[in-house]
Length: 114
Image (cartoon, rainbow, N blue to C red; front, side):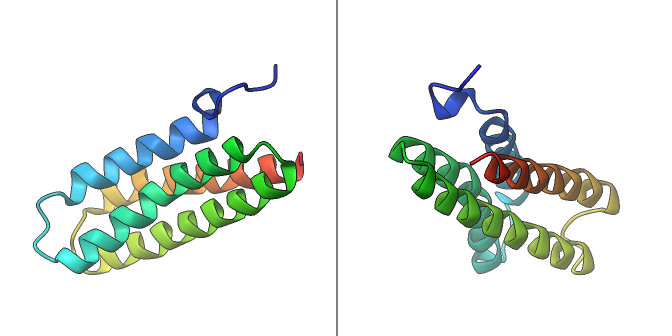
């Protein structure tokens, strides 16, 4: 079944959940620039999936999926910093990094279908 709305895409749903997790985890962080950057990168994943889907052309969709994949990489990179700076525990890191890796793989698979 072909998705009719971006909300139907499992990869968008997972990206949205990752963004929510990131927002909740860092909402009280006093490092405002770091918090802003990781939150913006996280929300960029689901937003770019949505924007590309709404464009209705495979070429544009693919372009926005690559941007989403890049944002996913940015989140992963920042999660490593979070761990090293003791902003998150190893257990929290493992959960978030695995979610981000899953999304990245899903985006790669989606791109290959276009």
